[in-house]
Length: 136
Figure 1 (cartoon, rainbow, N blue to C red):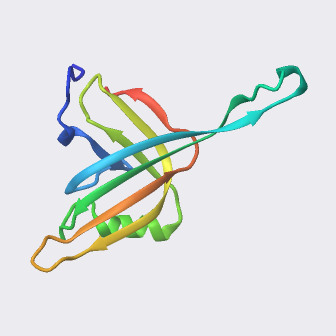
Figure 2: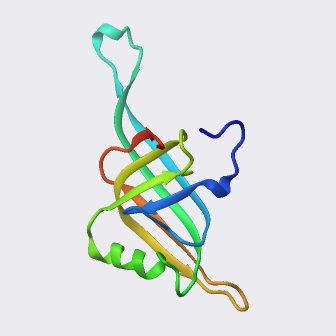
């Protein structure tokens, strides 16, 4: 049954090739559409805004765990391998919307503070369409 009302953000995950990124502390998805301007002699001087290119990205902040099932070494291999990764942004709750697409890893940053759990962040830049489907 699909989620109702406000959901707990803890439910939202990013999967890479069907495997959940472990130890997520936050994740996000972004969609944008550029616009282009049109003015011609038939417009009486009024500018029109027309649709342009679309883009999307996903990002995550992750606690580093040396023995994670899918973590920094896996993302590093994907980033340096230059192949697209298949992503899904989902709650994994039947009936909820999920967003899927292929992407390149555009950044991978690790931070280690004194007496703190190391963290890293990853940004995925979409390559082609982002699709919306219903989780089964």
